[in-house]
Length: 327
Image 1 (cartoon, helix red, strand yellow):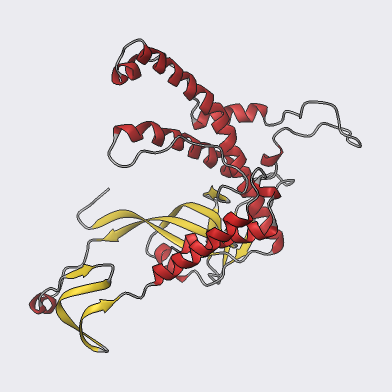
Image 2: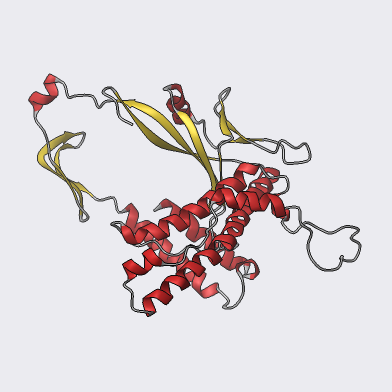
């Protein structure tokens, strides 16, 4: 939405978290619930999508073109996020099948991961699954690279993350965020998590009228981050002053061997400079990434799931995740 004076845009502000060991367990449980919710929705959407694909493929084998087969394929109901949420609400209390284990007096729940977790975490994961299928279906009809078919999220192979709307900055000291919990008293209570640094930038954006729409809490390596999507009305770009217009313009060409080259020499603290050296941060980071990727490959035991790999492999995996996040 654009007006004559302001332009509505979304700004992402990332803040590093400093949770306690007890809070780390809660964040991991929320991330596991988000992953399991995505897989639950995938388990309902994937068979329906494949039934439609088989019907379309039969028409193609009969001689129809892909475009015509897509149009005449038999209608198949593919659940949406709202349908998945309704189905999940009906089955989430189901007990596990089979006999009771030794010492148990009642059946355990089949979907134990949702208990005590804020319901928004599961709802957002259902929407993410719907978006993944929608992006895959539309990728063949628009410009750009094709989007791969959605896949299940596997433990140790996907990023630990969850999305919520009930995360806000504690404005008293700008060093804490409040992560919402369950309304049920038996569920997880709200958390007050400390930040590594004062969230001054986020506070400034909110003070200028920004509204937090969504927050993604994710682990990158060993560090947890909270990414705030803030909707804000920004003023129109400031026009250059008369003095700036009189000084003229300088063209800047960004390169690889040379970081930047200007059309005219620019006065800096080191004198007049026209070619700016490349600091090579990316090359150094990539060198470290290749080193840890080789270690990760050497320490990997084929056939074992991620949870059963060695501590050395997990260390290399965390280093690869940390360096990849820095690139």
